[in-house]
Image (cartoon, rainbow over all chains, first blue to last red; front, side, top):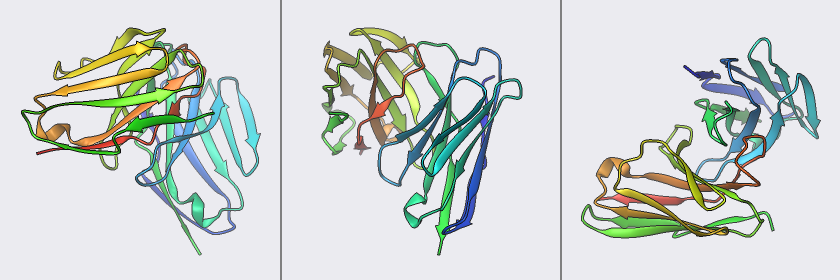
Length: 110
Length: 114
């Protein structure tokens, strides 16, 4: 199977740091994406990792360990507008097909 | 222009109706996708078009019929749908379909089948 696992829900405080983990099956791995989706809106691209290490983009960073089948999305200096669903998606060399995790619903509280 | 547009925004149709969803992008992308998304679930891939040819059909029932008239347009023709087909239908595009390019999603069409 190609299960992508991530926590269902997380809660964090405004101004804090939160880490959303994602684990996946390593066989056939060809890249991992993180998307943000606000309720009722389309997913928007956050990051792409295909090599091991940390990719930093402003307040958001994403990490990948291919040998462990593990990624995380790190959100710093949380803002209320960061409340959204965060989707981990893996490409398994199937012509653009992405396998999505169930999404992590992040709630940012004042 | 990094926008994918979809029409209509909302659609209510009966089980005997025929309707079409439309998607358009002007980013020069050569891969386009249809996804179905139910509430509180991730998007599920339905179809992939690569260079205007259907490259992936995820065993979607024939009551859904995709069409790619040119490199900028993608349609999804609907006929004899069931109430369980009610969902958000998302279109996406990427530079090519090799899997290492981000997909840009449109705002979706919220479909209700009565």
